[in-house]
Image (cartoon, rainbow, N blue to C red; front, side, top):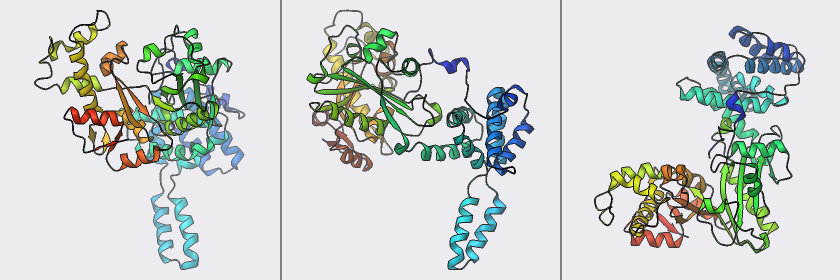
Length: 456
């Protein structure tokens, strides 16, 4: 899922403040720490020679100092944590020998000691932050730095794996809260909705108010240790029939739909704004909870679908034109982009039906192409992995500049049926794709491979 609207992002200003509540943390933040200061502080936090309270206090100092130092020193600290505070190999070898030599009674105790020895030493430091105000958010932001350093070639894979393991435990769905956002929600949360929307930018307060109107719903996911930071945001439109065009759906001049009259819930944007939680899946849980909330509130709703982008389709398309694709069109592969751009400015050309046939065929081929048992499109992977199926392809569903450049204007409806989500997921795990009956029929008529498709 996309992350944040950089135009509005506070983080673009490098303003990061954490509410570490420990005496002396401001002293640490205002003093110039060097790498050796961090090394000594990490040792004290891990070993806790003066008790747990002192160790937490030192963790707060370390976090404040880390936040205050420059990016180069932060990178050195991350490398130090990776290289110097991993596993104690000698200790592991000793416990392995103890386990192998133990009798049946002593083996359980030896196994427990070995399990503890297998935890990297830095685990003790990382878990200290859970007791600090904003400590979990600090670690999430730290992982976003780790990911950036990994992208630049730094060898921080083991530190990243440790953080990911902890986050999978801490951010289990059982610990998360789903909240509905309305126009009456706090100003700070409304600002974050605008800041974090990465699919369809919110351009004004009026635009935001329209997306929170009575025929709209917005659900957010929170963790109790990050109460001010949404982990995922889902926008829903209540409509009569399935929406096919996002510009029309978001038009502030559209007539209001009485929620009691709506028969369809359209999930048109889902965003995971926390870069440091990449790889931790929230979408499936949030969508399922939203469906349950909506069915409880509006029992007449019968259809639950997305209106999703098809990122990467146009680059794929332009690499996969074949001889004959333009036989019935007055332009070629080299002038395809200009012809596509003209659709938004000129009257409908006579060749439009032929272009629509080409795009529908190619988009269906793209969405049903698999690599190593997975769809090649990232959005398709996300929704199908959550138990959805490919419901419908929408021609010219997003004619924004980004929609044309990334997807030739195409959008897709993925369907969510609570009764069939497990079945759809089983189909995907078997190496096949669940698609609506109409799309299955179209694929056969167009001569596309259907051996890996299952009609639902």
